[in-house]
Image (cartoon, rainbow, N blue to C red; front, side, top):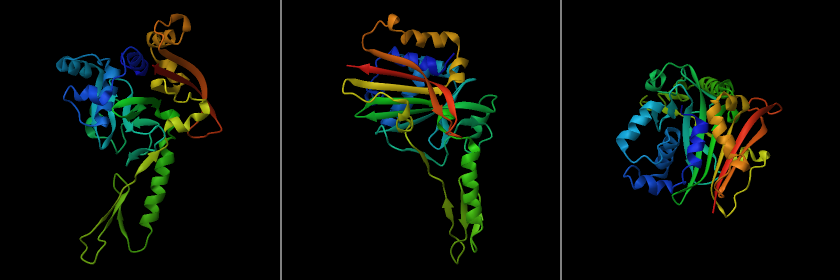
Length: 293
């Protein structure tokens, strides 16, 4: 069964490619963001080394229930599993643009931001969501974070509350004809001819997890490390994965079981601040991996 732990294992079993060049050579992409999204699909489907595109498509159909688009979250969903949103950056500390969608602790089928196809691709009401945040420089994937939304984002009522306050504030401005939309709203008939409208759209952004979670004593970048991976999830989520998937990774973290000297793999028990109430600490698992020259 496809899941995050299996995806991490796929990464450790394969040399990290210069992803832009790797996918460009297959005449599939021109942009680093596209390459990162294809890479994420392939680690979850375990098809990094599959060269037959027809066979790869068949595997995708067995693994994913939905592939999205640039305008609506998520980018992909696992059948009976998690949703995944991919974000490409060039800096390890850059703020992540979420555009009109606020950060999600979970993905809900009744969200106005998702498409009808996404809503109807399988029977579901809510899904855990993974943010796959990659730093791509000079065609190389240097850093990849795989972080669950409920470790990273507050509950949706927090963001909806801000949105409602903004809408109510605009609606109470005298002389403004306001209509709410799926984004924030639209002001109609701005000019004397009543032919101009003002579209009001939220542009949400969130700080990079590498900055947010520095209090976990993340290992700093070193010249000999060509790739670093961090994955963060609540302990209860980790324990919900199949035992076989957990054992695969726990063996990688066991010094007695390591067979490749370049591997630097670790699973740590950590406490993270609750996104809804930072005074409360949540038991979590931090998985880290590095490729070392």
